[in-house]
Image 1 (cartoon, rainbow, N blue to C red):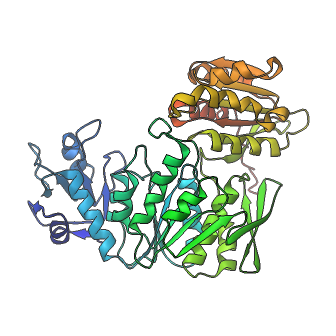
Image 2: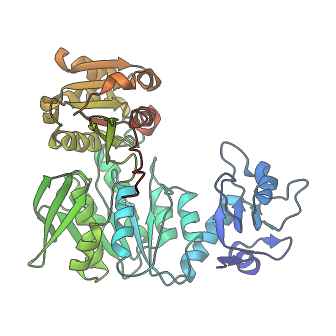
Image 3: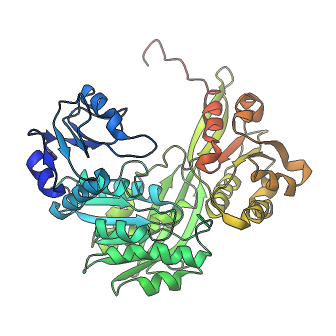
Length: 466
């Protein structure tokens, strides 16, 4: 299906096409480009203009450029500035769609909540959502430029690293519902305080449509800041919120959340997920209420969501096919800050090891915490979950401060780089163990996850086919 014709793209961007074209998608990376895509030649670590020829070789239908590179003969849409052109295309994509748009931001859980919303809203119509973590100054425009005009719902993730980044993205997305998942110590290098982070997050409400609804957690110290920034149409969630948590229990690898909304109780079963995802699920139910959807159906649909790799996904590792000896891996290696690490440790504590097994934590540095980073890493040693955790392996110079604060009996290996554990993966766990891997993306503990996965054996297929 055609996403943009050349004429439509010219009108949206004010650019000039060198030849007629139509595109079915949009790409900024020749490695993932699909035939029929519009290749956007952004300038980042590399200049995208250097890859335009390759994009056409890979099947691009057109390219968005600020100049036609030498030797390129395919259709090009020439604009003064590629990023501004992409942003204009995103603005036009938002303007022409019939979709109800949900904007999501927060210190923790943006991407997981976006995927929860995708699973929930799929029960009510067609859904378009941001790819991966496309939540910055180019990710949001791409999401909107890819937005089909006839979809029912769109979920746009909006992130930030520095002050002033959320407001322009929110104004571009113009959400009908804007949700803040939570506010926690993250990106403290760029902000003076948690209150500063809350004020930046609440800027998502500056982009709300006139009829839009603000959704926010009711039980944070900074909730008054979020509430004061919200318009009159608002729904709070959490303990004491309009979507109120009444109970939560963990059993058999699932978290069951009960929520009360206007006197009715709804139950959400989150398989393979820890208790820290309960807040996100309540927020999603609040979004469903804001959209006037059937809450019983919404709660049921949320049960179809599963944590993606790197965000708390739980999996069984078959260590010995002959004896069916297994260990459990909790892959939460995509990112980390004090709040998400505390939640992940709670998941580890709530997961029972097998016979003779242990609870093990492999923790990488938490980045961008500012001047308090040493104290914040040391404080992890006081988390109650560590009383039932047998061994803690620490990766990186910041986590070394945690290692020093641990009792000697719980100290595992303390290494400067994730690679230093990769070669020792087979020594890190035994049958029956439960191992959590958690760290900021820049700590590269995902490489330890990959090494642990490689210890797992796949079962041979039954030759009888039974």
